[in-house]
Length: 613
Image 1 (cartoon, rainbow, N blue to C red):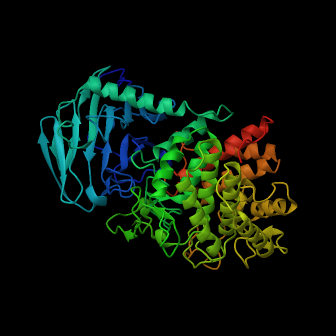
Image 2 (image 1 turned 60 degrees about the vertical axis):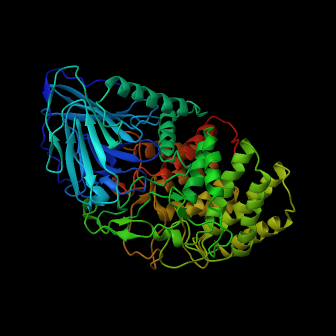
Image 3 (image 1 turned 30 degrees about the vertical axis):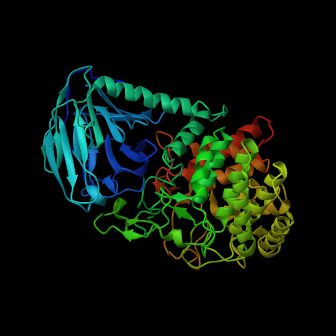
């Protein structure tokens, strides 16, 4: 672990010139331990941190309210300083450097993956401190007391007490720790924030901290070292894979869509959702992306988690759209009225009512991932295949229902193209899997259902007027979700009907390399306000172009999209008109779409055949 480096003796100031100001989403790096994630700004402040799990209440939330949300800020007193933030290569260990004519201060942030003393802690090696937690989304008061070198924060809520430990003597005041201290050149100060266990209260052992740092670095490097991708955009692909792994719950194997909530899809607008849950769609896409890179363990663990979720007596189907990371089925929406919201974008929501929606596409996305796992790994067991056929029996009777669709619209159910197409995928992959693995039949009912769905799409979703496959039955508008048609092999990427659909999507939804999901007309999604461009759709467009043999255009657009990543290679859900990051951050769907586009495009440019599917 790199020590704090200073050309001269430096001190830390208690005051924070940025306090009360919203930091742009793109100014953050993330650290985590596959149980939770913390957002660290280029100013050295942890401004968002849910504890102890992804979907737990916030402890620091100044990203959503600089005054009431709480933060853990560390800043050196360097005049005219500038910052540079980067990851230690091939890890999720974040380094923030403060550079000025007076010297250099360096901060290292990480969360140990495997630890005895620090089972769930943020470790910071730094040169200044202001730690002011705010429990239960900033709604609960707390008391503070000193215990040796520790400061204990005890909330008046159901959350457990937390501690801040250091190799410095900490001073508790005003509900937190506000303190300045001096470090000489080469000196280092260490802070650990997290669970208040008996062992964590012991005096800081710097040798043990160094050992945890080395273990954490080794864990991430050994994991990413298993990747089989050696192509043109290795650094971006590896960073995206590390993000996806960071969003995996190491205890349950479930995967979350994003570690944040309430970040707006348009500044000042109401599209402020909570993504700290496990969506079957996003999880399936994530597993698909990881398997493309050679990672298979994640699929095995997720399948075990998924099998425990199957309920064949449910009215809405064997599976629901999203779950809590521990498998809980209810995520009721509530509004946090005490928080301003990012750049005053209200309401700030926690929970997500989409768990009550019907989204039929999840069955296809899930079966696609399962198919690839069995193709390149072990085949399903007898019981697993039985469960799969039970799920498909239900789907064979319900594929023709209107649903809420991939975009989780709140303007009423419709017969969406994407949902219908993914139902086709579910049966197509099951048939392929059954044949390749000699699984128990018969398959004739699957084949009849698959063909019936195909004919329905060709007949009812093709618009002769638009020369395109349209968003939903009876519509004359296109949807960026249709970009997945050749990606899932529903249609040939050079079929004339697909090429004209692709042209219609580019004309209606694309602005250079940026792509909107759809045009919100007739209150399609139940909200009147607009949103930014959807970054995953940009990568879908790039891959669709590459598959349609427009390689030069696809490469140009891909390299432009890389330029929209933030300073450490992370993406939010959307991009605004000025290139600002919007929506929850970092977004799994964006990073997995990047991996998919990069791997296909790289192979195509190298003249290699695609081995998948």
